Image (cartoon, rainbow over all chains, first blue to last red; front, side, top):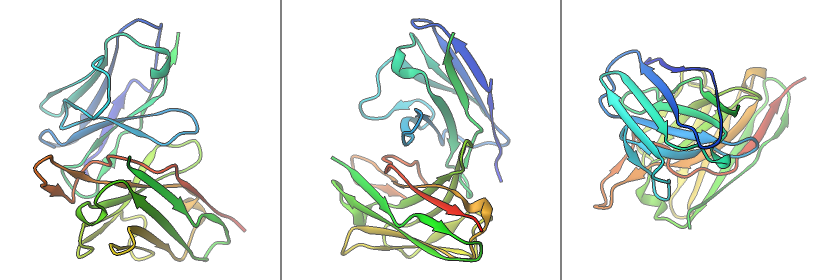
Length: 107
Length: 126
C-alpha cells in the first residue's frame, strides 16, 4: 500500500497570505495525485488532479506542483472560503490512498 | 449538473447489514467508474471501493473486502454498497463519487473522485 504523508497537520495563515501544503508518497505515483478540500459539514471537493491540473471551476489561486514523490499545493492568496481541511490522494495503485489531511485555519 | 444522492444509512448493531444506494444524474452514468469513500467521525477520508463503468471489475480496501459488495444498475443510474458483518469501526459517513473521463471520452477506472454526494451516515453500535 502506498502511504501518503501530509505536512503540516495544521497551518495557520492570515487572509490574503500564501499557503503551501505538502504531500509525500512512499513510492513513485507518477503524476497520479489529486488534492481535495473539505469544509465542516460538507462533502469533499476536487481541486487538482494529475498533480497540477485544476478541476472545473477551481480558482487560479490554487496551483499544484510535483517533484518526484513530493507534491505541493499552493494557495496564492487565501480567501475566507479557503479555510478548510485539505487532502491529497494517490490514484496510481490499488488501494487508492489519502493523506491524513492538513487543516488550514485562520491566524 | 452532476448530482449524486446517497441513501440507506442508519443505525445497526454489530454483525448487522445495510444496503447503501447512490442515485446519479447529470452525466452519462454508464460511462463512469464509481467510488465509495468513507469518513469516520472526526477522522480523514478512506477509500472503500470502486466499480468499473460496466460493473465487470470491482476493487476493495482490505478493511472491507469479503464483507462489503459494490454493484451498479446502469439502467437505473444507481450505485449500491452492500454492507455485511458490520463492525463498530465501520461507523462513518459514506460518500459516493464518480470517476473521470477525458473530454475525448476516455474513461478510467483507477481514477480521481470527481463529483461527490453529500453522504449518508452509518452508525454501528450495540
